[in-house]
Length: 293
Ligand SMILES: [Mg+2]
Image (cartoon, rainbow, N blue to C red; front, side, top):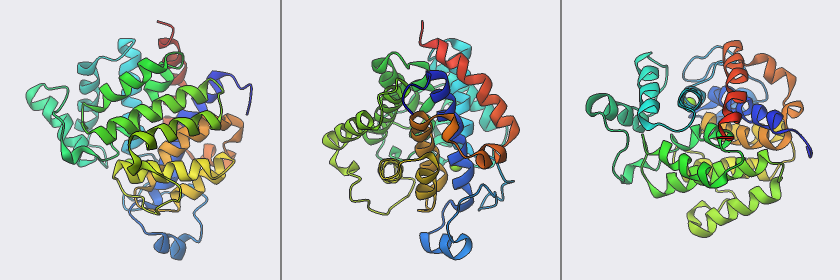
């Protein structure tokens, strides 16, 4: 784990996000009891779920993270209008699944040209946090800018202090992890979040894994901090059910950045949709060089 190059950690983080999404999508919206009855413990990427996915297919979490990454690469940085165009193109392509708050934000851009919304009580969902990863990779040598861009990109669809705090924290955690700072530093950053907003306290784990950004981060943090491998982390997270694909995506990004490519089970990498793997492999090196400018 120590001494891995940043290229390895960044690629593992992005593939980890997609794997968490593909694994968790099978049990999205299910309860722990329903998962146990149907799968025992879900350990493999098998598809299905409410979206009737092919095994290895990813959902909106990965698609929006890739869209954000594409825009960052094209503009060599964060350009909110270009990002909204990228999201609009994605929405028009008719994706299987789009969160309500994301849809509303993208429509606001399409209909009125607005790239951000006002602060909104209803915007504390996890839809901005689920796609945070590319800003961390693009700013792997600049934690301040990573925090700033994480919030700016969030406001295209979600404008709420808890969503903002989640996005900033996740970006700062991944910047630290990409530098090889390890889980202790990630824990300090998670504790700073809890210090600012005690509602995020994740020990003891509440057992709630909804699309509320607080529940999602608690589920991802519980899985990440209470296990010692990529595989154990993701299995623990997705078997909580609820918004399992998003909690899985976030936990997968953290675990990938921590443990690196060799720690990702080969059966999961093999199962992941080929086109998604190729897209991520092409995107990550281009994101890493943005940090140099
Ligand atoms: Mg999803």
